[in-house]
Length: 342
Image 1 (cartoon, rainbow, N blue to C red):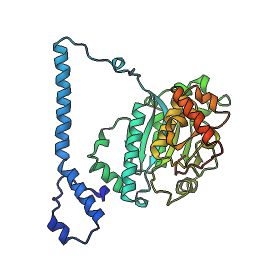
Image 2: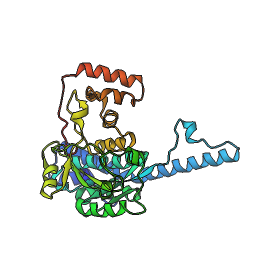
Image 3: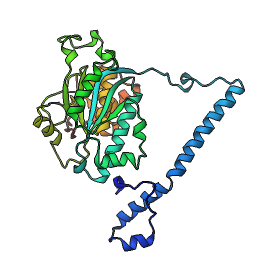
Image 4: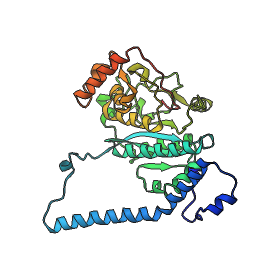
């Protein structure tokens, strides 16, 4: 299987090996050959990356020698904004390794990678931690993915479970590296019934799961939110909720039902949950955050009452037309979004 991929010192596969080994299905043989091909090209891929980097540096050097100014982010249509670190932590609980199939672990590894990437690109960043990092998932990161996660910035990997990691996260958030109350956490943006210097200072630990009876109304600074790192195609329903309740941890779900109608079923992957939270930290509006993350093909539309506020934040008129069309097509649809997450 893919997650048990050998390292570069593994012996090559040949026909004699396949004939003397235990009988394998065509699908298994195909995966073995694909795995070997990946290993055979590992060094070649490194050489290609090095050459691209060398060519890029050479072009910059020639441009400087010829007096050609370097292109700025604005020249490429992008304006660089220095990200702001917020005192909020998101933990991906990977304590479900033995419950997943190899293909599901592969999917989870991709989702974790996407979470890291989205957080790095976000104008308002959270602290990101991976708990219970071990087993086949860790093996995949260290072998198939060549240990690139060890060079990631702004994310930590832990053998400890999410509760222990949450304690460490709280200490970091209250340290000089914790971040600042910016964006939606500025004093004038906080919910009126609370104080930025009193109730918010303590924070809270919340496990996000769609099975929770509690709805998440806002994100709170100095708080830690746990996402279940589980890809199981709904084989283990309610597992994340039970995990949290058994430990006396507060649970909550996204206010999806309060904001959206869905034309089809939509499973929230771990990276979807992460992106929705990052969008909320950026925009301060659940409706806008959900509309920007939920794929348009799923037919997600805002409910009456939430529509106008979100329309103002949509990118262009085409988005608004899509919103109106989808609402007319699915006004009576209210699908439940299934996930271990929110």
